[in-house]
Image (cartoon, rainbow over all chains, first blue to last red; front, side):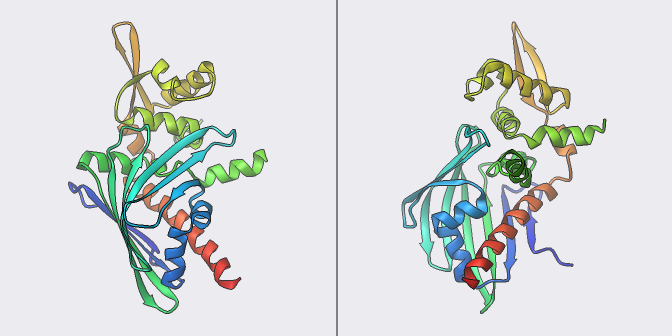
Length: 153
Length: 106
C-alpha cells in the first residue's frame, strides 16, 4: 500500500518536503489549518493566537498532564490565500533552534480529494538533520501523551 | 531489560523530551536545565538521571561543573533517520483527516 504521508529529505540540503493525500475536499483541509479550535484539536495543542492575514501572528503552547507548559511555538504569516497557500515562519521558543520558513500548498485533486505539501527551509543542513532526529520536537505531542491522559483522567 | 525499550520510555515523558530539546543546541548544567521548569529541582534531576542512564545525554566535566549534552548518535539509534518523523506527521494528519470527516458529516 502506498504511504499517504511522504517525507523527502535529500542528504546535504537544508529543506524537507512533507506531502499528504487527503480523502477530503481542499476547503476542509484549509479550514483545519485556519480555524483555531480545529487546529487545536488535531495538533493536540492550545492555540493562543491565529491571525489569518498578511503579517498576522500565530502562537501555540502545549502542556503536560499537570498543566506545565512544555512546548511553545510562534511565527508570522507572510502569505495566505484561501484553499491555496500559507507561507509562515516557525519558531520553537526556548530551544535554541533557528527559525524555520514554511511554504504550505493546498491543491485540489478532485472534488473529494486533495494534496497538501509542506516545504520547510532550515537555517542549515545540521539544523535540519538535528530536528529530523527528534520528531517529537514538533509540538512535543505523541500518541503516548493521549494514552497517558486517558489513564490519568 | 531491553535497552531500546528503555530509550522509548525515556522519550515518552514530556518533561524529558523538553530537556532533550533544551540541550540539543548547547551543553547545559543540571541547574541551568532545572531553571526552565516549574518542577522541583530533585524531580528534574531524576529526569536527567534517567536520560543519562539510557545514554541519551552525555556528561562532561568542565572544572567544577558537569555539563549535559545530547547524544545524537543514540537519538539516531532509536530508529531510521526519517521514519519516526514521517510517522509523527502521518499520525497527526490522520487525526486531521478524522476530525474533518466528522465536520463534513455534521
